Image (cartoon, rainbow, N blue to C red; front, side):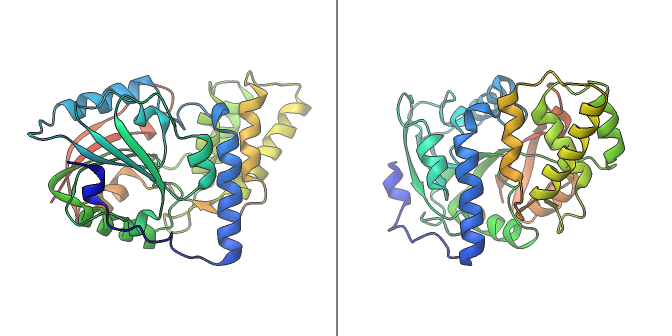
Length: 293
């Protein structure tokens, strides 16, 4: 099966308000420029990739796999795909496509387009697999979560698979003070793990999420306190600078609990497996394999 077999003429990405669109593009343009400085757990590591590869191998296909990648995560594009796989990646950010997508060197037949995840230019029931990493985080709840579930249900064939790594907040919320104490005591290994813990500690309900500007503002408070105490975390400056993409940004991120995520997925999918990686904060980065109902 060719990728083109799944794709009618592509519509333009969905419109938004000019201010919201400009801020979204500005944030993701900056994120794209900083991508090489982003590390785990925000990006999938080798352990994540190996788990996903194993889960794919466990699903035996009697035809070449037609797969959709949400976003342009290079670690997933470059993973060891079943022989004959054809991969289409969809991202709405020109910067992410330009700077992050691996434009060469892939062992799988793949191409990337700019598009809207909630209005995919893909025929009904034509995909064997949808795969992605962390893409619920920038979505609004409940509107975008519900629209995405319906759109995935539309494009996947019955019994098709949905393989995702997601970021979840703990059932028992971590306090800001707990994050502060671990930060000042030097108990947080990765700046990116710190950034996610800080975001989740500031998180309200799932429909409220957390404003990116609030994450940056709280980081300034903690950094000044560390400076007064003469403390300097052993984090690369280029990685720390990635949080500057949040400065003054009103966009909100959302982190469901695992129970909330399962409630969202249940109408359209049957969960088959759930794995928690062993790295720092891996308990908040489960990998789920689901099948379309």
